[in-house]
Amino acid sequence: MRRWFVLILGLVILLSACGQKYDKEIDEVTKLEKESIQDVKNTKKYKNVERSKSYYKIYNDGEVIIMTYMPFKDSNTKVSRVYKINQTSDQYEEDSNIDPEKFEKDNKPVYEENNMKK
Image (cartoon, rainbow, N blue to C red; front, side):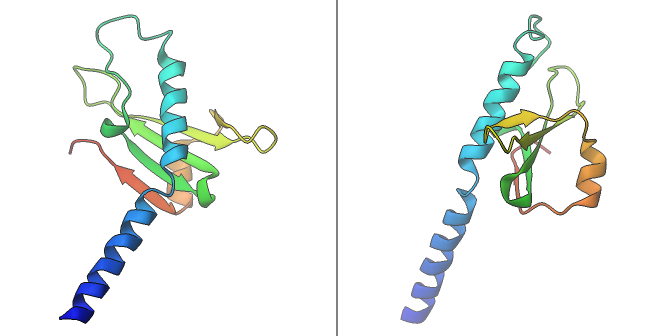
């Protein structure tokens, strides 16, 4: 009984530590996306960009993050943005040269966080 308790406790600690590994990166990308749509978001048809309503896929140990969310209130249209870390500034930047669907197909994520309603 004691072994099971120790095993379960160890797994809980391990899983909670893994889940928080990319928190900083996800928060940074979410903030950048909020800033990038601020100019466009002058009508009432847009939703707020929130981590709790987005889907994140992280590749290459955090070098590339694909963020997917639904920007419109009256539609189920999904938008995916690719953010890549700039090696000189060590900051994330949107990379519109990468096709998110092709990138997802060709690469395997190291971490996923799906907060979108299904």
